[in-house]
Amino acid sequence: MNDSRIRQVVIVGGGTAGWMAAALLAQALGTGVAIRLVESAEIGTVGVGEATIPQIRHINRFLGIDEDELLRFVHGTYKLGVQLNGFTRPGDSYLHAFGDLGLPLGLTPFHHYWLRAVQERGHADAQGLWAYSLNAAAAAENRFAPLETVPDNPLGGIRYAYHFDATRYAQYLRERIAPGAVQRIEGKVVDVRLRAGDGFIESLQLDNGEIVEGDFFVDCSGFRGLLIEGALNTGYENWQQWLPCDRALAVASAPGGPMRPYTQASARTAGWQWRIPLRHRVGNGHVYCSRFISDDEAAAQLLANLETEALGDPRPLRFVTGMRRLAWNRNCLALGLAAGFMEPLESTSIHLVQSGISRLLAMFPDRHCDSALVDEYNRQTRFEYEHVRDFLILHYKATERTDTPFWQQCGAMEIPPSLARRIELFRRTGMVFREGDELFAETGWVQVLLGQRIEPERHHPLADALTTPQLDGFLADIRTLVGRAKNTLPAHHAFVARAAGSPVT
Ligand code: FAD
Image (cartoon, rainbow, N blue to C red):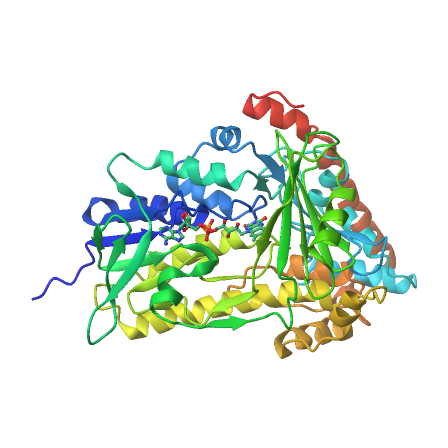
């Protein structure tokens, strides 16, 4: 019998995606598979990506990473959610907090009880919903501790992610890999050789003439998609009609101001601006649509909205939102920016790398890369990307802003039927359902739908089972539980200083 096991995996790219793939594959595959990673200092990495979502903590468990040590290395802080400012109307603000909203009664999600209360009283003040989220209550007072469960309290605990320096994260993962488990090759890939017949990738040629052979190739080469596109011409599905921003300017500013345990995303005239507190600096960036604003004007808006002094000139980045038609083609899998990019509004890119690697491990092939397996991988990837895409589009589509041509266009755009259906169902019934394994849970959808002022006409009929005094008592109890748990949490900056042993400025 032929042994068709994969013996050699070659990763191209040493950005966040490349080193995440190297660390996770080395841990999972052990010594039976040789892993090599080719990176080029001359080309460099994209070097942005400071906000994450809670799933990143699974990597720590898998690799045995100590959180405090990691956060010291990456200058990290904690993240409880994203504050979205001005997306619906100028002056509006809401939080997409991770974690639970209240407590369900039986099978009926909590937000229906809250909806019933506000509907019976004749007003729907979406802000009020956040009094029932421990993450939101903590964020409002800049408090944080990694409270997995709340003692003597039925509430779920705090659900958190990190803010960090993504370049340092890649370095950290690189340093943690067991000696000899991954061979790093410095060099620039100048040619990709395909096998006659099936067109599988056979080898890479580097600028120094070296040939790197492999059975399976992981393309982490960034936007250029050197293997998946450059060699295999896989094609890219453009989503700019829904996610029109195509440029960004990133700049660090001096530390200062409150150390907020959440990312801030604030709408601007033709896009939005992020603010992310790290320990040693604040990360800022302006994501915008070049059809509606010049680079100079975008830079001026960014700099005018910093809380502290800029630590350099804004660094420009260009991108096209969308996804590769196939993330896996023949014996090549694309991860990270090589697989697609949907803009950083909900900090999903690093997570999509992580889930791509998990999916690869679950479907690890032999050298033939059975087409049924490849099709399944691509089907699941598309499902994941399209659901994230819909969630992001919601932030733009559900705007009431007409003050600039950019926002006028966002409000008027046609949206994918999958999202239109979801918005309509919520508007008419208050119901929203997580589909399959999609990334964002019902609580995330509810917060963004309500935060964007989509007010349901009704609530779930089962929420009528309580009498009005019972309903008021139930809601009051949860507010009390949330408030009590929140009061046990220290200030975020104090927790960072204590847990990670570094001075807080
Ligand atoms: P890159 O960082 O571009 O790395 C590419 C690698 O390929 C480099 O090592 C390069 O040397 C190598 N390479 C390329 N060509 C060759 C060649 N010919 N030979 C050898 N090596 C080669 N993600 C989040 O999760 N949260 C965020 O908040 C976030 N913010 C973002 C903001 C912006 C404006 C942008 C553009 C992205 C953001 N991202 C964010 C995405 C995040 O930065 C990326 O997903 C992540 O850094 C992974 O990048 P990468 O490794 O795929 O590509």
